[in-house]
Image: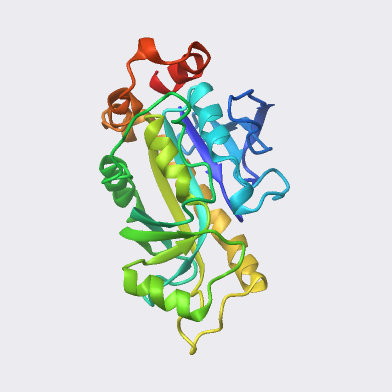
Amino acid sequence: MYAIVGGSGFEKFEAFQVIEDLRVATPFGEHSSGLKRVRIAGKNGEATECLFLSRHGQHHELLPSEVNFRANIFALKKLGARAILSFSAVGSLRKEFKPGDMVLPTQYIDRTKGHRAHTFLGGGVVGHVSLAQPVCDQAVEAIRGLSNAYDFDCHFGQTYVCIEGPYFSTKSESHHYRQMGADIIGMTHYPEFALAREAGLTYIPCCFVTDYDCWDDSIQHVTLEAVIQVMRRNNAKAFRMVEDILSKGAALYEDCNCREQGLRAGLMTPRDAIPKDKMQWLEVLLS
């Protein structure tokens, strides 16, 4: 089953039919509000059910650093998610990625470390998972094929730099991120993608460009007002992608090895040495 995580501008999709509102107890605290089981009609006439979670909360009440990423990922996994389709708004650090474009990054640079709880491990549980390829290649290629039919430009294989926020960058920072090799900039994918890997979930990030950040003085520097205007147009594009991806069913993730790259392979502490209370929730992530 797919879980859709909607970021800024994607807190809801009007065409979703809500089946039920959900609330899941997690060992990591409260997940974001707005967790639902939804039904989507589908282009082939067959309805598809999936999970939907508003990353910043149903009313956009959470700053990026206030999102309880661990609780979110744990709740989605416990409810049966196998793949996460992540939608978010990003700034562009390259002229060729313009507002309205979709960028599917396959690499990340984190600039938040130390501020966010970023692993399920610790407290008697030790493990290490690889983030060398944090996004599923199989899913990327499948979506690349779908994108040929879209009337908006799509880009694949870029690098996303995740900053703490809530401020937009200074001009010096924006230039620095470009020199680091980043192509787009956002505030929420880390540690979301890393926790998805620990949980053995396929992570598919679809980022919609809203602005050019502030690295080019010939272009208006990013403002919230301008971002919101572009967000409204991007929502419809994202829903079209949702319909197309869900129409493929489990084909995008059923044969990938993301599940085996998580804690199923990366757990170092012997199971019989793990405290019983932790083993109970760890079984959810290992399933």
